[in-house]
Image (cartoon, rainbow, N blue to C red; front, side, top):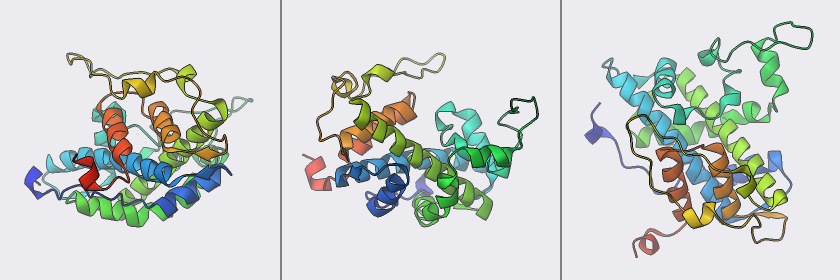
Length: 252
């Protein structure tokens, strides 16, 4: 599959604000502003797009057009930035055996299914809600995938957005993100990326707001916590900052 066959990334995220708000409601009773919902949807789209593109490259090397779970593993193995939504890994057969062994207090190995149930299962249970959006995103990238691959993408999206919502709510409660610090991923032999949204990342610890509403800035702050550095975080923040803004406004 050539780069020319890839359809343009859709301007509107396939993950709707109503879906985003439903996920946030699973995590917090706080109100979620519409700009915050658009930003969270945009970040999730950016992350899933990068994962799909990495899987497409892996499939192309084997002259395949349809993505399989092995392509997902290859994409993550080649780009550590894509290791997101990790709570899904204990649930999916794709990642079985790759997440390490966990022991309980008595030294007995904890089965992976029990581990997934102990880690806030709502994101896993609600993963099916992302299927329509994932399929739209696959189509926009000129890709198709076997059902198992679609389920993995659903799960990763659901867990990632749930964690993003949890961190955004924490930012509201704690008054900011500065105390958590920031990190930038630099690959060997590559120059350090230019600072992005420097004023935002170095902003005072207190964000404006009523303490009961999650705004776009809170989602952007949570994004810096979920994506630890590198090009993916930079692109996610840039696209999220523009999310929900009419194209003609963005071009000015």
